[in-house]
Image 1 (cartoon, rainbow, N blue to C red):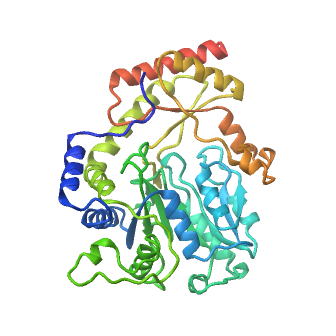
Image 2: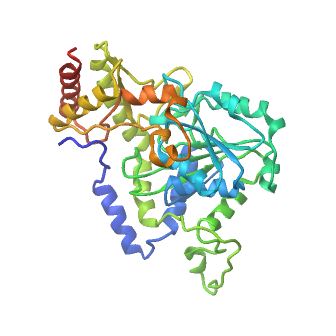
Image 3: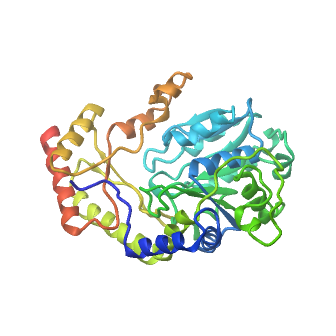
Length: 403
């Protein structure tokens, strides 16, 4: 079976993890701090906090910004449930927007109609690694400053809606000459096992707040907030006579470990010159064959302003129904090829359906979902395996759609 997206675990990573285990530091320590600094250097943002997951990172930011019941947060209807779940955890209301049919990203024209005095945050999602048009989103935010009603000191300091990017897929993607992480107020990355860069589980908060904020001070607060609100972490307490600490706020447990960071350091070292070119090569192989077929709607990955991180290959089968798409997937699996679907729109999910969200309110999200199939993309995927994937897809579409 050709798997969908296994992590790249080789001797370089194994040796670094073993060295970490032998070092005496397995929880948050020197490797985590090094990883944070190297991520900051890579992305070009102002400061970075490594955390246990992207989900934890997003919730920490919402709580830092003071999101509470009664507040609204705008998100796309087409995303993984984590984007919405963290809003619910804070007691706030997810306000869903439909998507652009070509990019799968949030439809910016819909955002403007959804902003109210209760809107505190917009969370666009870089679906499959393709950056949203952040300049246009900032333009919408700035044109609605008069509606913004701050209720905390942090909100007053910003003076507008917070732009928090769900950049779970888009490490290394580029928007107008800048890498994601250095474009929005704050971006949150995922390093889950299936991501381009993995730490097994993990994520990072890339701070890039305007100059009215001291991003290093925000980092220090979030560092405390992510470890129970404790004023000193284990590394700080290890210094002679430095055992005593305080708890300055009831915080969370969301810190990254040095074991995870060890994986991340190796992954990041080879990311730009090895990982991304390999993923791009696989995308190009898919493009070169599938572009010949009238039924294949191929993903946008690059134009004059943006370039994807080549995370997920979002193939759409033109005019296929949901039933036909599902039948095609079943046929593909018969060739021992794993594929996936990214994503089920949130209103399809029982939890959100029960809250009153309706699929008919998001027709583009539903249409894209019904005919989408995600193809395998990972570092160790060979040319022969790519050919196997393509043959499986082409023959399965022909069998189901008689094309």
